[in-house]
Image (cartoon, rainbow, N blue to C red; front, side, top):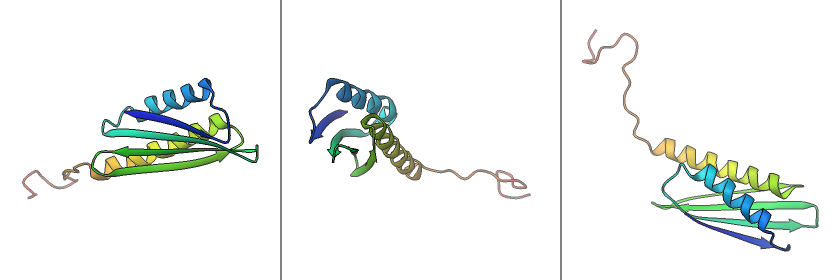
Length: 111
């Protein structure tokens, strides 16, 4: 998984880069199809800290999330959580759901 961290309107710090990469690795590590993750960190008017996470995976899977808070670390955490939910939802939809024998039915379908 390739992780790219880009900063806009601010100086890059090793602590922010390390936090973003470690948070992504622990959260998105369960999705083996993820190929590229791009994290964009931005400061607007010195108050709003915006974190945007864009994920590209195999089979044309694309997920992205943006979060704005007053703390950059909280923005990163929230955006990664949003992307994690999107990927989990996509994975659950794509899974093969087999028929489960309900109450009152037998495996042959006859009572």
